[in-house]
Length: 413
Image (cartoon, rainbow, N blue to C red; front, side):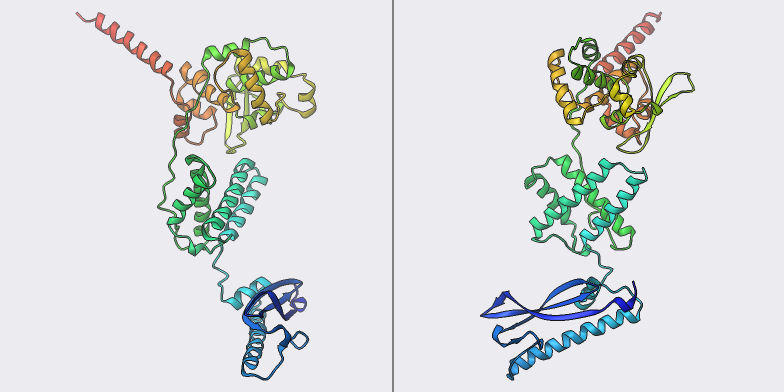
């Protein structure tokens, strides 16, 4: 933007709504390139004595002269700081001039500035396929939660980064669990994301030290329900006459035999199927949640389900492998399926993934390292939490051990 187009216009006006003792507040308004800023001068005057055209107070009293001198100095100071920016070749905006006038260091970032910058960077990564939209939504929600917390705790919507104290995390957690009625794990999720944003601020040089580095995010492992092999078989074998329920049942069973999460099943296309080195059909794609690769062999039942829908009109029109409903409808239909099949458990899209991890793979002696790769986990620690070995597997292992020890005992002289 050319400097010649950067004109500074200064105006003083009365703000009657913010007066005191019968006097009105004098406000400073300046405009640069049609961008306006208003600030209080902390001066007050009788409205009848104000000369809006002359931009001064009428009268010859000492108080009047003091106010007029102050207004002249304010105007001169603004022009001086404007010329300083111009001489240094720096960009000149109304906001920059306001900060310079108030003595605010431009390098002292505010919380909202950093969160917005981090969000925009994250959105660019989503656009390039490096991050998922669901993760971006979590960043957005965290940003909104922090705004609400600042308003609740400090009666404002923003603060300087340097104002964040170590107690911020504990207070934020309390706010999320009491005022927002969230659970501990949800609160920890938002705090973890906010800590990541502050780490980003440290890396950018906007913060000297991480103020929340000592706060440890702790999680309570939620109960992860899964289906037994008998329940999976009962659902798969059940005759269902209604097409909408039959399709949801098939998609659910497909997930039980592949471990794909809802969003990944929803987006599967014929191009995701390849022939592996074993000559069998595999699905290879990046997980929507983490963008990590997920390579899963198509077991016989999964192949049968795909074959069933290869000529389905919706699948052909949308270039999809399966007719997947919206997540809300999907889970709603699963409730009906549970009743029809006599399943007492609360069926959800994610239960299918957990069933794959435990019932389909681990209980059939697939090593946990392999299961971790099939699920697209970045760390085997995630698999250890997600796919705990069931009591049935423990029983099978102990039975095998008992038989082995008995055999060894019988061999003794």
